[in-house]
Image (cartoon, rainbow, N blue to C red):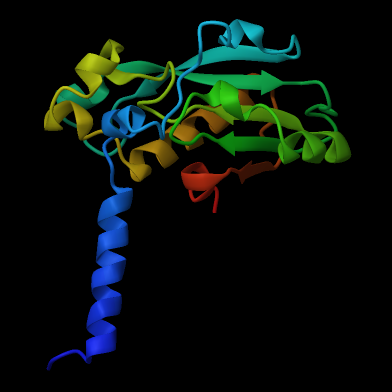
Length: 191
């Protein structure tokens, strides 16, 4: 059964848009769509209420092959400024990182949420961005399909879940609700 002309054009337009959005992160950086921290804008320039932490994250959450047990250091940032504490069951607002360095995301509406509801702020960097680079470096991580194959939304969601569980456990905050928010691609992971 042939599609009417309008539906065919619409399908082609959607396919083109989907393909255009699937740009390799390195090519995106060369096109100016992915910004890096300038030398003067390092993570050490964050206000003092932001604490940088690292979690030994599993490279692969879904397979049980020996190489799946490899780990990398995933960066996340905590801000306790507004937190009412675990005993008050104050919320934990989790910012799900997107396709850039997480230090760019420590401002905005999430601060208003934390102030209003006495929440803890947790910003989790997406794997393959910023300092959360599997295989130790960008060159090795983007080397070929076997290393780049771990860059997926599913793996990122599992990363976020692992960090949230670890933060809650370390703060004895298992009864505190974790509310995920984000923007752009990262926001689609907070649904």
